[in-house]
Image 1: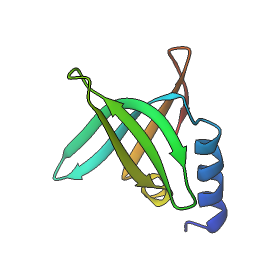
Image 2: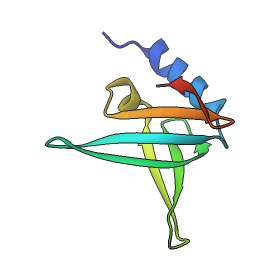
Image 3: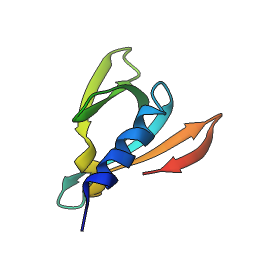
Image 4: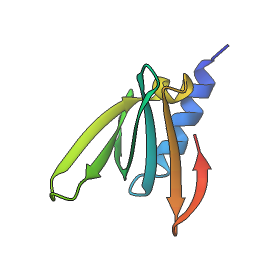
Length: 88
């Protein structure tokens, strides 16, 4: 059973990685997934924001809740110096 301390730990992990490059995999349902690389831009009490840039030089900001990570609807791989360091 998920507990409040689990969410607090996820939030702390994300807060320490603000500004770092991540690979995000989000389930869209019916065996479809959204996989993109971006940068963790900010962390708020209930959500965090990831900035994605594409080949057309446009920026897209998407927010996710910490519960998305807890329920495994969203998976994050955080990079440091082009190496995977943390999988949420």
